[in-house]
Length: 117
Image (cartoon, rainbow, N blue to C red; front, side):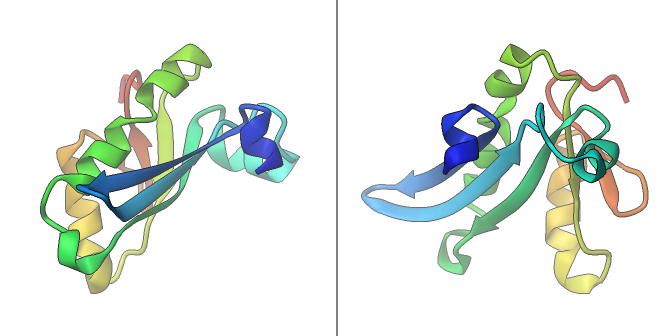
């Protein structure tokens, strides 16, 4: 919560009607450790994306991934980076990221609001 209070992390909750149905966390990493900065390469980094199973395939994940882009632009970051699993249970997530314009770099995906790749 401290990092979010300083603007270094954005945690968003997706709602349908009055029910929380998913969340995403995005680290802005302006004061991150050398390891985090090396991994993110100056990009904002998605640390979690989750939608409760009964609410999947309704556009919640897509909306949650789009929401932080204004924060990323305001922070003058080049885009968003994330990583995901490569085995079968993660195929739906990988398909979503590709559909959103993220480019697969072997488990690491680059993309988002202003990434030219």
